[in-house]
Amino acid sequence: MNAEFNWWMLMVGLVVGAGLVWFVVADQRRREVDIDARERAQEALWLSASLEEEGHHVTPETAERLLALHRAYLEAPPPDETPPPDVGSSELPGDDRRRVEGGAVEIGE
Image (cartoon, rainbow, N blue to C red; front, side):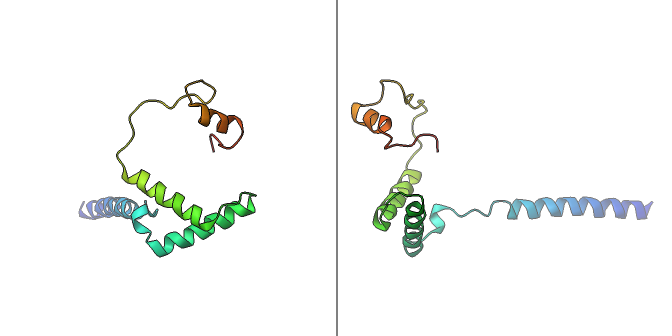
């Protein structure tokens, strides 16, 4: 009976060990706080080049400003739980509505 118990404990240990390894390794994504100013400039260059390949002209300075604004957005408290206005509705301000209808704003991508 001692041998069966040892095998059972080995299996439990392997399962628990695999669970702990998965827990530690599972989320390896980088976060905004992991990126310093030097790497943010490199990211802005990469974004600019990627968008240029798609036909959109975005300067590296503009991309860097957008990244800084995105970081500020993530650091801010979450927005209220009100649903966003429907794109086709008249709830959008006039200027925003013209930009959406003119194709300046891509929705859903």
